Length: 557
Image (tube, rainbow, N blue to C red; front, top):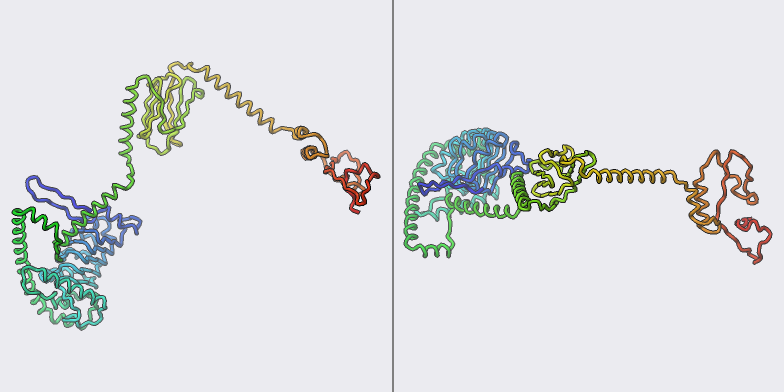
């Protein structure tokens, strides 16, 4: 937002371009519309230190824009070339700017404008008639704000404003503030010795009579009786306004003459006593008046400070490199790598700055050396440089060097480099000078790989057909009194291949309610496996009647 200045070499005058709305500013202020400028309907550009609207706004979103907020800037004029594209505009806020008049033809294209805010500008009685002439062309204008201008009488309870009592307390406060501001502005005048009244008392009636479609002025509704009285007084008001305009122009001309005389005198004093004047300027705080020139000067200083602050913040932010910068770094890295290789001659040292997992292959294509480098898929090929030599290859990928010594001497002029469209990997195909070079080691490596594959396949087959019943016999001795023997028996019975139907007869002894097993060749016998348990008699005697049943638990009954 800093204005650009150009200086002519033949003269000392500096031409400064006014600060206006730019495309970058529009994009930053269109976040509520997802950054789309062409479909904007509402735009807030307050406190941007703008001096003009500029041509960008009408070209980008002029046909769709309905609400435009430009308050608290330093816009001094409305150029018809900048506002002619704002045909859909309904609300325009130009409060707290440096407007002295509404230029002829600047708003006539805004057919749907129904609300205009010109609060706290500098529209005086000498430019009031021209301003109202332009506003009279707006047939849709319903609300107008002129409070705080030098031509508008600030006391809403006197004169023409006393006919309406519907103003709110907030309007009274604003009116008092505007009156105080205009009074202080009158005190700062150097040409007139006596204070002028703050505004013209007939301003409200004049505006109401000239704008028949107006419904509200300075937040106060326009009553029908007020409009009738204003229309009857219109000829007298016009004559009075023109007389005041002549007086005001004469006063401004006299003030301009005094200002130029003071400026010339000050410049002469600075030439005579330059050091003393500098000390006085540094040591004291100068009071400023409420004029368009002073506001423009303050705004210019604030814009410079804001630009310096943004530049400092931008310098501290992490910088994102573009394609041109990456290509420049690639060219510098290539030049540096090639120069280092030429200096070392045949003494080439391998390096892998990017830590790529490359691989050589001499088996799949006899007589060739194949080098595969896994590069990122979406890396531009302009950032990959390959240099093949008979004994080594040098590859620069995005500024990082991959230098490798080749396993065999190759013909560099017949070598090719290709990239996969699927994975982005780089494949170098380099024919050998001697196709039989390294063939012994290649065959040995191939034979070793085949043997390893065969042994692996054999082990997989053996593991698939293992006999768990035989393996269980090696677990431990077949002893039912030990846990190892019990485990081996259970594993053997569980892994035994079953044929035919299975019956559970004989698992429980007949004395304990079991079913006697009947011999049947087609039925697989099952063996009851259990742990050994000896019960001690309750009377202390030993059970010697049934020695064969010592391994079975005692009967329940």
